[in-house]
Length: 169
Image 1 (tube, rainbow, N blue to C red):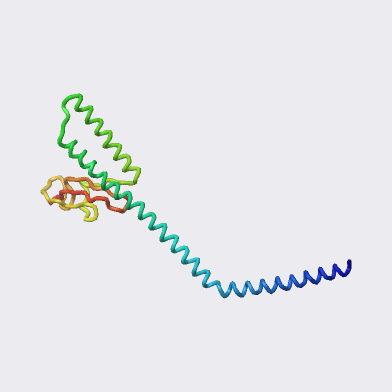
Image 2: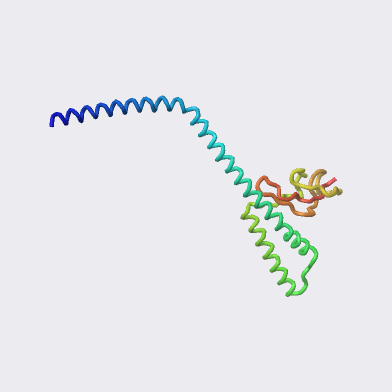
């Protein structure tokens, strides 16, 4: 029994020595590989950030594409509301239904983060407005938008369509 105990103590001592050597070797290799591991970690973070940004940009671009297609419908609604004046109750009821549909589209735009670009009374901004003409105005100073010809929209900082405007001269 004493002999077995001595053998076990000897084995434990050997294992502790091997463990100490392995720990020392681990520390040496950590120091050797640390710069490369740090570089790989940095590279991984950069790739994750780039992919996240690309995904975000793709989402915004998809929204812009959909909104551009839907603007054709809104423009037709705007033209119809400006050209047709309902006279009978039946015509007024039809117009109310069309207005409800129009407002539903605007509600969806709001949920997508689409904003209408401010026009009349705002200072002309080359990034947001497309000047179609200049016209004299007693109401607005020179360089301010005095008439909106077609609405413009944006999603965050991304321009979907510039507003077509007349600028006071």
